[in-house]
Image (tube, rainbow, N blue to C red; front, side):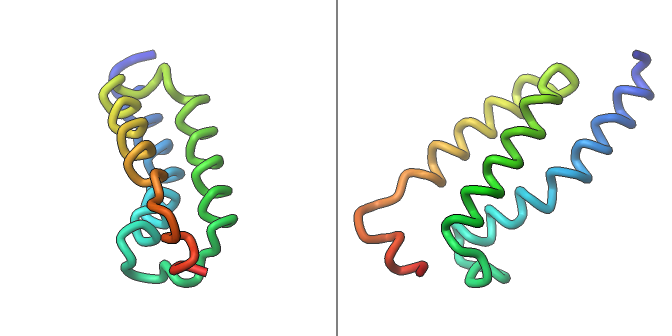
Length: 87
């Protein structure tokens, strides 16, 4: 795979995962349409994002995957009672 093909594929991956990332971002920082999404929907979004990132991991820079892992750890560590605020 040439560099231009790799770049094109990475753009396709980004176009697929960027709406998922945005949905999660909105939910965890309480902006945009975060109230439209239930905790179950957020978990489903995260699973879909994980799936897309995992199947494309060999095409992505390792730093992207490292940052995804760190953001997941941060965003998914709820404090007691926090999930009740979002229901």
